[in-house]
Image (cartoon, rainbow, N blue to C red; front, side, top):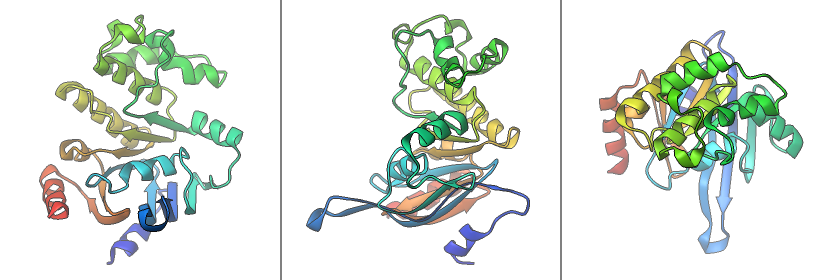
Length: 254
């Protein structure tokens, strides 16, 4: 089975959450033309945890930004839960991100005047809902920030701020969670707890998780790993483990 055929196979009864076809993102012009993403096809199924890896400049972060509607492709198609986001109006795209997508990025983007609890509940309040403090407490406890919920961002360490951002992304139970190096500012134990939370989101709550990482140990928590080279999928690994990821990435580097 070829790589393209492998991507096209869909597990019976498992719906598609995010899909892209012929996705291309070009920067520059003339001799400085760069294909950050180059005609890429990929399918992300409901309840699937996918890690995206690749050497620096391979296009993994660009791919994530395109899939999440944070950047516009040069060409190609992107659908989220069957709806094309290409040409979607700003207001409609904003509503989609608020109601159906969760984001865990390296920049925490916390509101400095709000407490940790208020930052976590902000997406729910913006959607006109009422936060469940019990659920916030349970999530904060799992992430090790329960005692810090009354503090503002400047009173928190970088790792604590990251955990608040993670809780904010998970609290709305979004259909799709985009995570860009989510363990980068965390210690080993908290990083593992976060990855287990993402696993639980996929396996128990049928949320789709798409994570960019450079860390093979983090990627080993995923159901599959896509390895990008020059804006294309060079390898797709299933039933992943640390050793297989390291070996494949070593081959990419060579």
